[in-house]
Length: 141
Ligand SMILES: [Zn+2]
Image (tube, rainbow, N blue to C red; front, side, top):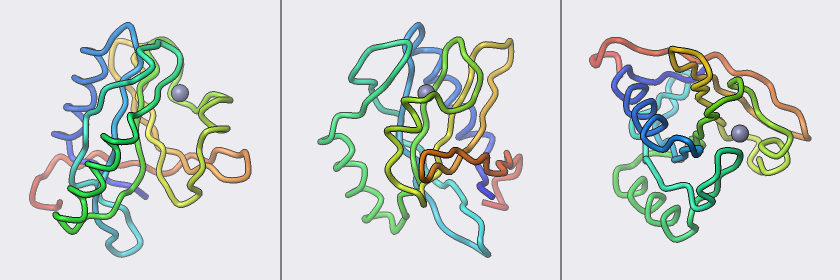
């Protein structure tokens, strides 16, 4: 299970709508507690591809984020990207490009009125949805 605060959910959602018509992307970092992943920081990044159908992150930006995570004592948990007009599930390309079986791959769909966020783990060409909870309380996080 992975837990995200309402505030981080909202900032991903804002980033995703501001990036339209293109996909938005970023990294997530946090801690492992009682077998759960808790997102404590999201990095809103530029989609280098400027495309509505795929995304990539500048390696140098990614490295800077990883350094920041180390400074804050957070673990890299995975990444997120948006699907402007398709459902929140990994595309064939998303699956092909997912190289870390331990990572959480979050996808936010903007195809409906309300943004829908789902998380997946991807290994051996297979995406498995992971339970995602939006935490309304700041205290729990
Ligand atoms: Zn995708």
